[in-house]
Image 1 (cartoon, each protein chain N blue to C red):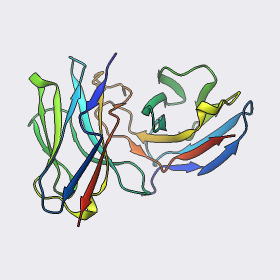
Image 2 (cartoon, rainbow over the protein chains, first blue to last red; image 1 turned 90 degrees about the vertical axis):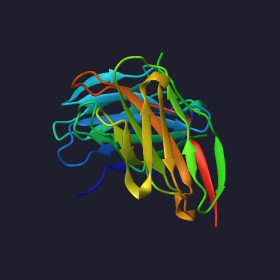
Image 3 (spheres, one colour; image 1 turned 180 degrees about the vertical axis):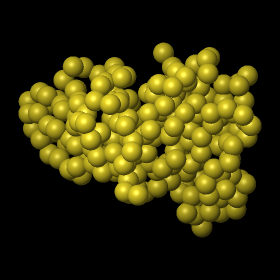
Image 4 (cartoon, helix red, strand yellow; image 1 turned 45 degrees about the vertical axis):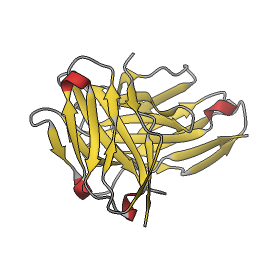
Length: 113
Length: 116
């Protein structure tokens, strides 16, 4: 079956702009989690959505937000972009319980100029 | 706060050498443990997982890991590495909420370079 699909693969933005990233989970998966990956901080959890509701949230500012649609697809939005937001943003989907592994997409590489 | 420590940032081995990558976590309750691998240019893939039962778990490509609860450790092992094992390895932990998906806490990763 198709894996987790993230679009776009690459994005270049300037400071102050906003951006929306998209994630299509594996068919049947209702949980979508977002992570930020940087060389300095590694992989950090942003938030998780399950059945259109945010179920868990990491320690990121309110500029980072997300939503999930009824078909489980998810979007992540970052407003007022800062240079430090440059990172690889990963989406992962799962069946939704903590003992189910998460399956990751290829990520969206966001560069802020 | 929970944390996951991977002891080695970069490991360099020759083919056929044995591998052990260390992972320790800080949470004292019931946890689920994972090892993920990221091959160059590819997405993160699950190597193996531990939820309960036998603390020695076997994963794909000949990898195994042992959960030692008293040491809060989940070390990854492979008896004989191959050049194709060159990748970055991540240990991850989440708390077992008894049904709800907890967020995954990742270690900083260990880069493994295998010399042919």
